[in-house]
Every structure is written in C-alpha cells, then in structure tokens.
Image (cartoon, rainbow, N blue to C red; front, side):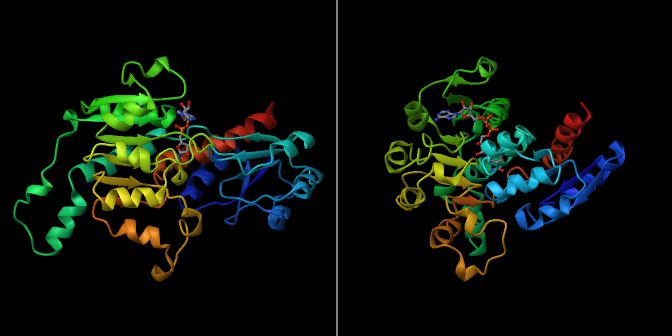
Length: 321
Ligand code: NAD
C-alpha cells in the first residue's frame, strides 16, 4: 500500500515517517497542496492525505483521480468544504476527515489570550517601553473566578473551553443551537442575548454558516459590558471587523483576542511586506488591548500528531477492510 500526502509541513514529517514505519506503508511526502497540476505524483497510491487550504479543481479532477485508481481522500483536519462531495459520490471516492484532532489546543489558546487581556499585558508592555513603571489606576485587573464567561457554540472546542474556565472557578454560561447534556455540569445554558449582555469574557466557538456570519456586529458589541473581552478562535467572518474596531476605539468593550480575521486568506500563512498588510489588520495589531495570532490556535504537537495519525489511519482502515 502507498499513500501520497500533500501540503506536508515540516512539523508533520516525523509523525508521517513514524506512522509509515509502524504500518509498513509507504507515504510519499509532498509539500505543495493537492491540485490537478500535481495529482500525477500520487500514481500507484491507494489514496491521498490532504490538508486545507487546497483547491482540488472541477469535475475533471475527480475523473482523473478515479482513472488513476485512487480511492480515498483523507482530510487531515475537520473542514471538508474544499472537497466536492457530489463528485466523490459519483466516482465512489471515499472521503474522511479528523473532526477533533485536539479541541484542547484551541481552547487553551483562547484561554491564554483571555487571561493576557484580562491582566492587561499589552498595556503594561506599552507603558514599560515608555519607562512607566508606577501603578496605573486604569490597569488594575479582576481575577478570573469573579467573572462570567459566555460561550457561543458548545461543541468539541466550546466544551473544552467551558471545562478550562470552570476549573479556574469562573461562572460559565453558554448558548448553543442544541442542548448538550454532557456539558450540564460545567455550563449554565442560556440564550444568545444573555451571553452578550452578562459576560465579562465572550468566546465564539460556532462554525461559519449563513446563520453565524456577522453574529457579532455593532448592535451586539453595543450591548456588551464595557469591560468585556471578545475572544474569536473560530472564524473571522463571525465578527464584523469594522464594528469591532469602532467598539474598541470608543471603549465599548475592553479588548479582543483573535486567532482568525475575516480577510485572513490574503496574508495568514504567508510572508507579506508590512506595508502591504490590510489597513484593518494594522489598526487592530497596533492596539495594546488586542491580541492577534495567525490562525495557529490548533498548532500544537498533539494536534499535528493526531492530524497525521488519524488522517492516515482513516485511509489505511478502509483499504484493509
Ligand atoms: P463542533 O461542530 O464540535 O461545535 C460547533 C458547535 O456550534 C455545535 O455544538 C453546534 O451545535 C453549534 N452551532 C452551530 N451553529 C450554531 C448557531 N447558529 N448558533 C449556536 N450554536 C451553533 O465544532 P468544533 O470542533 O468545536 O469547532 C468549532 C469551530 O472552531 C470550527 O467550526 C472552526 O471554525 C473553528 N476552528 C478553529 C481552529 C483554529 O485553529 N483557530 C481550529 C479548529 C476549528
């Protein structure tokens, strides 16, 4: 058996090599994302292991895929929206994904950013760079167990996030589309509006859908407490960026931690000259009460190992059965 792995990054290589050795399966490592242009590199393979973002192509791609004798597309992460499932069904191509490679990784990044914002580390860094070391009455903090944390979306990541905040003694309230009994011991279920108006930390964990796009806009930001910290580890387009900038500039809310931005595809995962960065990114990045990370909340050794191992296992198990 042979599998071609595309979009392979250096951090994944040792895990691919170990899995290959353990399973006696040859895995061809290719750093470029899979497309029609490099599909031929998967000749003699049973399937491909892929990662987003990839642009697979139209109907021709899936026809060529089948003609080459390839049977499986194993996505190494949760999102499979870049795969044309109708074409796969038509050609009998089996598609698998890794729905939960490490929810804890993303939950910990959200918590890390929230605590850094709560304790005003950015503001202290700015003050100290100016030689200001005296107690600033504007920079006094609260402690997490006095606070209410509101979660919107209580799935794999929202659930782990709830457990972390509960472990620190915070009151955790949550709004989710459906009631999940498994989180009853760590959250109080409530409605969307109560999360917005009552929370000191608001953490977003829904997928991006037509129902969630722009769910945090000017009206929601206006209703938040003036000490509220907004955490978005999910998808940039859940938040209206212009409205967020306005709310931060007018001190309607206290801060924001963002691992995703609405326009991130233009510059995240790339090296970009600083003067070519989007204006909204530069405005946010210059604020001491904002933390931006380039969609790396998932990027831990545990998550990378699980993406590789579970992604390859999914292909291997199907071929063996
Ligand atoms: P999940 O499917 O386990 O949970 C999503 C939850 O949102 C579900 O409980 C669902 O019921 C709820 N939901 C969906 N639509 C809703 C709506 N309109 N209103 C209220 N609740 C709604 O997904 P997950 O694994 O927890 O991931 C959540 C999101 O996190 C992903 O969709 C993705 O966008 C993002 N993510 C980010 C990173 C990162 O590195 N920053 C990594 C992985 C995932």
